[in-house]
Length: 510
Image 1 (cartoon, one colour):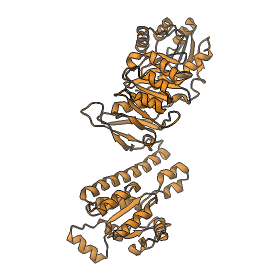
Image 2: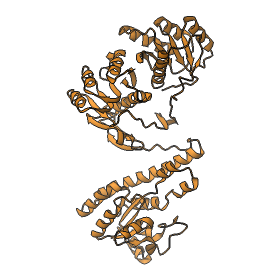
Image 3: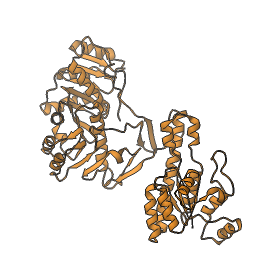
C-alpha cells in the first residue's frame, strides 16, 4: 500500500506518517513535506523517484504526472485498468493526504500579485480531485483534524465505502471553497468584486432545530470562523430565527464602541435600546420603550451581565440573552428560567465580524452588495439646515437614533431621548405611517417623547412627518435629505424651532 502526503499545513503530519508506516504504507512525498518526514527519520520516497521526472519550473510542476495520477485514478475493480497499470509500471496509491497552498494567508499579508499567483495551488487540487473521484478505492484526506479519524478506521478495519464517500464530499468542498476564494479575490482586484459569477462559501457550525418554521430544515454557516470562535452556547438551542434576531440585536448594541449599550429585538426589529452609565440602567431604560414587545424577545448586551442585571432580566420572559459574557452568579440566576437561552462571545465587549458584503435571496437567485456601514463621522459631519443648533445631549441622541435607524427595517423612524430609544416605527410602506405608529405606541405606553430626537434612515418626502413630530414635542431631527421638497422640510423645522440636520447619506434596510 502507498500513501502520498504533500501538505502546506504540516501540523501533525509526522505522527500521521509514522502511524501509516506502522500500518504497512509506503510514503511518497514532495518538497518541504518530504524534508520534514525525512528529517524525522521516517522512511519516505521522494515524488520524483515515482514520476521519473524532476521537479521543475521552480516547483510549479511536481506531481502532474501519469505515475502519480495513474496510481491514484486507476480502478481496482476493472481488470483492464489493473492490466494497463502493470503494463505501464504504475503502482497504486491508496491514500492521498493533501492540503493546499495558503492562498488566504497570502492575500492577507501582501498585495504583491506575483507572490499571490505563485501561491495558487495546481498540483494539490488535481490530486485531491483525482483521489476523490476514485474514492471507491482511495482515501482522500484534506484536513489535519481528520488524521486520527482516518487512522482509527484503518486500525479497526472500518475503512468502509461510506467512510471514503464522506471524505470524498469533504474533499470536493475543500477544492470548491479554494477555487471560489481565488475567483472572488480576482474579481475583487479587477472587477470591483462584481464578477460574472459570485461565490458565497460558508462552513457549517451547527444544525438548527428547524428553519423559520417546523417544516423547514435549517443550519448555521459562518465565514472565517467568527461564530466558531465567538458564539458560545451556555444554555438552550439556537434556532434559525434566534440567530437572525441575535445578529440584528448585536449589530445595534455593538455599534457604539465600549458604551454600555443594550438592545432588545423582536422579530428582527429593535423594540428597545439605551446607553446609560451602567448596563443595568441601559436594560431598564431599553425595556421601557416597549415592554410588551420585549416579552419573549432577544436581548444583546454590550458587556458582561452581572447578578443585578440577571435578576432584573428574570422579571419577564426573555427567549434569548446574548452578551459579551456573564458572571458565574448571573449565569446561575438566569438558569433558573427553564426556557431562556443563553449565548456569549467570551469577550469584554461585543465584537462583530464586520463582513465586507451581504446578499439577499430572491426568487431565482440573489442580489449581492457591499455591506452598508454608518461611518463614525456621519452625524458630526451632518449639515445644519435650521436656524437652531442641537444641544450637546441632542447630538448624543442623534448618534444613537441615526445608527439604530440605519439598522432597522425601512421605512423607519427612531425617537431617542436622554440616550434611550422612546419610540420606533419600522417596516412601513409610508414614512409618515412609521412616524405615527411609533408615536401612537408611545402614547399607549404612557411614554413622553417630548424633547426627543427623531432620526429617519431616508429623506422625508413631505413635511407631514415633521408636523407629527412637532405635535409630539420633538426638538431635533436628523435625516439624509435629498427630497425635492427639502425646502419645505427646512421651513417646517424653522417654523417649529427644531434643529434639523442632513447627513447626505441614506441607509435603507430591506
